[in-house]
Length: 396
Image 1 (cartoon, rainbow, N blue to C red):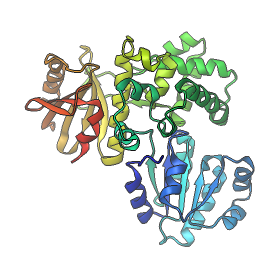
Image 2 (image 1 turned 90 degrees about the vertical axis):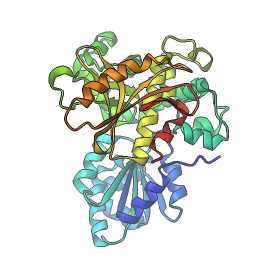
Image 3 (image 1 turned 60 degrees about the vertical axis):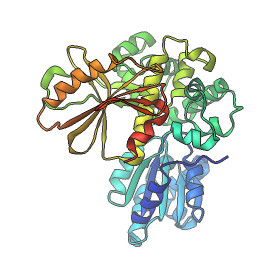
Image 4 (image 1 turned 90 degrees about the horizontal axis):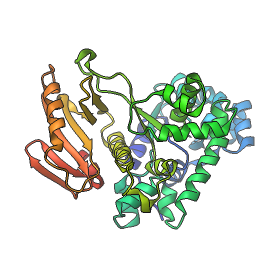
């Protein structure tokens, strides 16, 4: 079964305007399958194969001679020495677009090579897991929310719904620890690293405190920071920055932490589909899900817009702020409720008043993303939005 990816049109357009296209994303998000489908006339070479990666790194000229464009190079981060030669190959025929399509699952080191060698020559896009709308369209039904959260957004989980959830995520974590992290950093104790990953998972949706994690796991704060960077680099964790605005010292400076796959979060928290809705942790899981939905749709449709959160010294907090054109702000809270009370808007109203007093903020819109249906307008500028309808917020 093929699940259509919303980013497909952006990928095709990028290949028509740039000599190279770079697609980053965590392992198993479907990068290779998507590119093979979109670019059937491109040769495909995977550097996941050690001998192929070794040839690309040690003999890049002969590698490119044997594999001329149009070419898809999968997991290109395993041959950093190839990038300079890709630049020369592109420059020999600069007017031809879509020559090289590159994928990578280790963002930071990979992106440095792209920035150094392919600046101005490559479009850069990110492929996250599946959005709720992609899942619904792909499987032809609307899954129960507990199923949606527990299974997460990896395409394999929905292409074959008989895959045992716990087995999939345990295998994914084991493979990821062994393959990617040994490449990114020297992890002396993989058991400690997995415990660290679980410790970060228990703090999903909270302000980042690396020292607390280090203390709980029994490692140094420096090690905790290095490992967090590795999790970011391999697209497992995202840090959401606070809305800075022009409000001085009243705002927190620490980012909030989110896992990039809500099914992975449920796995680390020990939450099964059956137990999820009754768990005290379901609110944190729901906020993580809403973060991913907002991030996915913003990236696919409005990459020029920014996503933030708000928290000040009076502990007034808004889960998410979407900054749109003309200083239009959407203030959004995630609520695990079918019908949130009208009082749930009070906090948003209070923060909106603060933000509208700032010079340049012209308009605010308040939203609760809940287990409701569709999009309901409570009063002017106040809406209750289904978690399954987040994508409709960006149909504009």
